[in-house]
Image (tube, rainbow, N blue to C red; front, side, top):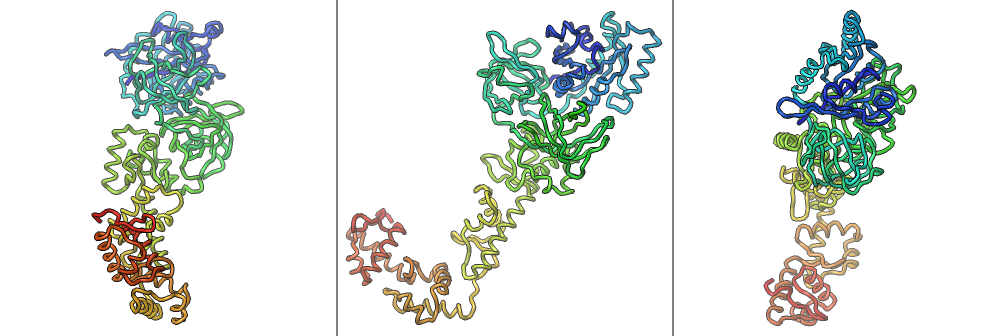
Length: 638
């Protein structure tokens, strides 16, 4: 993994000249840049390090009109070389660039005091003192200051040594999700479209299928270069260029992201932690519009705060950001907010939830807000747990969790398995590796139990309920695999009892009132009295003084208990009689191969009308199969 150094500083303080003196590479490549003597676009160079590594260098423009370009370059750097001229000292863009680096999470850097050939010794000491005072309270407080001259070469060796030493610091942690934010796109004759950027995480190789976000356009990598040298594999931390197949220059814009197909997602709503700069002339308004910078992308956005109407200078708060167009990011990415008028950097922060689907502000209580604000400093398992809770009642796939946690696949898998062992998360779909938090699973379990309890209260005469009824009680849109995972968990834990196709609470028992028990006994007795010719229901109900509506749940209970078999509406047979009839039909078919309604009447003594209904019932049971006006045994081994 390589290291990227970025320059920062006011216009005309000698950043580009210094890089040329240090590396021999001229970062000003545009004719306009050479003609005007200022850097307009990002410039790139490299320095060879001991051990064969190369340090990438991003030279950023200093003019206030090109702060957008500077932000694009600063995203992805590991440390900064802050350039301040000895003759002018600290200037407006010196301050803004340092603020931007701070907001982007840069933690390390060194300071070059340039143009020492233009000042005397006394002026140089005053300039050093001025810079030290300026850096007090910043991440560069106490950083070494190196007086240099790009003209005479004074101090360059010491500065080079400091750059090497700084590069040896542990590079920042990166996930293994391949992601290249595009900061330049151009066409190369004989090759086609080329994009460049700092590979912030992951790796890719020639031939890999890639996707361009937010457009979703697909391509594959024809070739890779890093600092002018062809590479088979691109590694995180390197400045690289990719030759992309099948895409034109017009298909790609600065700020687009090249990533492996299907690994990242667009969103138009993020949850972020924002800090308003102490130096900002005014705060940020709730519902206010801003310029939002993320990596190499700039887009219009509107801010919605959770707990305030205004974020004052020096304050930090949770905010929901609504974008004018889709954008793709990862947890922990840094962002910059610039005001519209006057156009200046006013705030920055860290992305906490970069996917659509997070609950709206009104659904996130104060406790969850506090947990979100603490997320950047939380351990990995806490991060996973909070993100799964935010993901909602269906949880999140492991691929989404990579985006939501910025953890490598191996680390994420290890933590999920450990959390699963403790019962705080559950994998409910082994194929898609979809996980749910114990908090949301408990809610689904409670809903399923509540639906079962409600059914029992409404239908006290039924032994249990069909699975479909419970699934509907869990709420709309629950994926079938998740619903069955919930039911299986309830059954295994004994909180639900499965009896055939029915489910019930373990304490549930059919309870009949005295008049219902009497009716049950009367209905069963009437069918037992005439086993081959069941009673006519209209006459039976009139004799008992009841309605069909009163009888229906009792019949259902008799069927579920196994006392009666329902043949069709208004026709029930005693179960023992049905067993005898079924065996007679089976034996007849084994002896004669086929049976007619007349044959069935002869062997059973049952009328033709009821006999046909019984034969149709045996068809449904798959004992018999109709062929014309006859039946045959369905599978002679049956």
